[in-house]
Length: 81
Image (tube, rainbow, N blue to C red):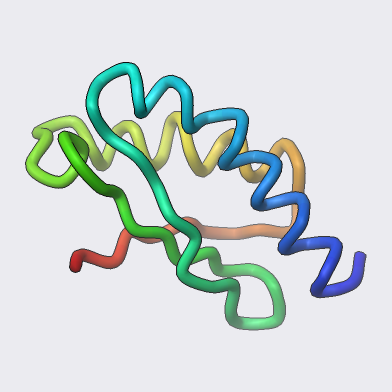
């Protein structure tokens, strides 16, 4: 999978999870993909920023969905604003 394909598939994964985040007043933005396309950096926004379960959302929801589209991704991290 090329870097462009990885990015496109990560964006598809974020599009899949975004409605769930938006229904709770949040959102997510892709900041970048690094370390030979194995690390995804995102930024949670809105209600997700101060939410006590945002780490669970990040790992169980976002990371799992991204890995479904791009199995080579090893980790998804949130970068605070």
